[in-house]
Amino acid sequence: MDSYKNKIIYFYRRTKRMPSYAEIMSLLGFKSKNAVYKLVNKLVSEGALDKDSQGRLVPNRLFGEVPVLGLVEAGFPTAAEEELVDTMSLDEYMIENKEATYMLEVKGDSMIEAGIQEGDLVIAERGKEPKPGDIVIAEVDGGWTMKYFRKTGNQVWLEPANKAYKPIYPEADLKIAAVVKGVIRKY
Image (cartoon, rainbow, N blue to C red; front, side, top):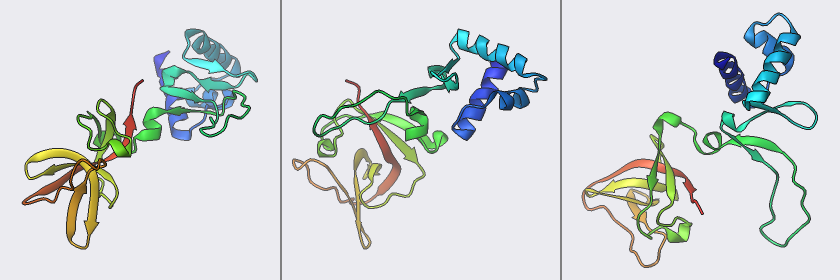
């Protein structure tokens, strides 16, 4: 049963959509749509799959997906209706290269004006060439920090997002370990 579910999950992650019954039949090597129907019902009853109001297959949270219900107005309130627009995996949204990605917990307030607070988690990706303006994880003169990467000509420095701190100009060594790709804050 798990191998069938894994093949469906793989199809979904590869194509960004759920397979049709005919595609499941072909994918799993079944001889009839009735066998697919029985399997789908079993997966729905186990909570591995779900169906929308039209009976179409939708991924369940076991797929690592979270429903996207539309937009929310951050300005003036407007009438809104909850509508399942799509589903999205947080990995898919925030991580391009899983093998090169890691998270760090933030300590300190030097990036507060960038919206990064102490206790937040940042998602960082190794191996990306930083562009000026990127937030980076860097080793500078033997110490580690997270700051904006700045460059003018051959001059490179790190800039905090807090007016209480001064820019860091490396005296001897600057190594960019990773580029920050996202921030997670739990309320």
